[in-house]
View 1 (spheres, one colour):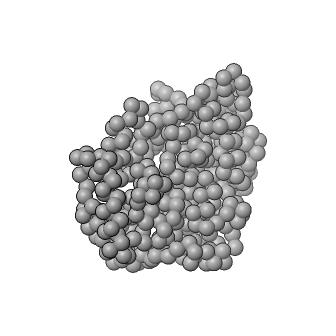
View 2: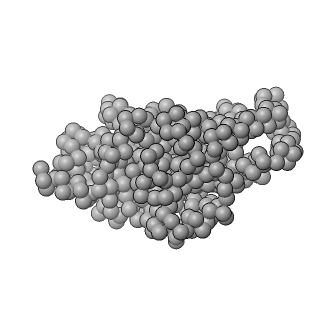
Length: 420
């Protein structure tokens, strides 16, 4: 049965939630394998907007089920909020979701730490303040809580006691959350999840299930924010690439397809290098037309032209086999479209960055293409063909609006043009 992964091919915010939602009714399982409440996946269903920060982006009326993998860091309070929103419109939907017992938890003191550490930095990274970095730090340093601790109160209390001893030694009076506060919070959210009838399982138990049916793996953020291969230190704290499916017990060799989602232009939230960034009236126009404000934080996104060297880098790093382009309609009506084709890096011309260092020193080299009136314009098709030739990967699907149904295959786009 088919296995497919969908990942962001830029700096996140490419519209993966909508793309996953579009494909979801073709798959029995939608598996989220990384990230936490710092990721906002926006979908529109029957005219209503839903923002999932942790829940897999399944179609509400489909038979698909969702699985939250061990590579995630779960904010249980936010998870309950998301489930309650869906329950109000789709009673019983929570029972479609399963959580891996190995999933790591974001605790209240992680959010405090996030604020404290960011305020202490000489050059702030621009975190979402959702406690993601400190939670992943605790995971690596073996100082945190996994979901299964919630089902053994004695073990949980002992664990919290040990963790709190270390954190109070580190932060002193700056940390206001006690171990008792955290215990009460965890018991409260656990009870709320049980009332919602959410399911618990492990990837070990689910391995045979997943391998015997169709699975869509949903990533978070984008390749250029990946902890290992993104623009470090201006990255997230988890894997943003297809190899993150390993947290669910899968290998990338088991994937039939890896789709990279990209915008017709480029955006970035927060600090860090951004070679094709533009400013002024031009940037403001694209930002407003594209509603480029973070789904999680509301922060205005930085805006730039399409960056082909970065896209080639993402193709190699995440093994992209196909592309989905979003927000093509945002550039409708522009006379000229600029595209970065190469970087100048310390006097050398490169078509693909050798490492993430190149993003920090790159000077973009641009080509200029004719704009288009709308996505049925032949110049838009030429834009797609240009990208495909430059990257060596086909653009199979085009999104031309925020609604899930506002998406089509490239073949259908061509047929529509021929029938005009």
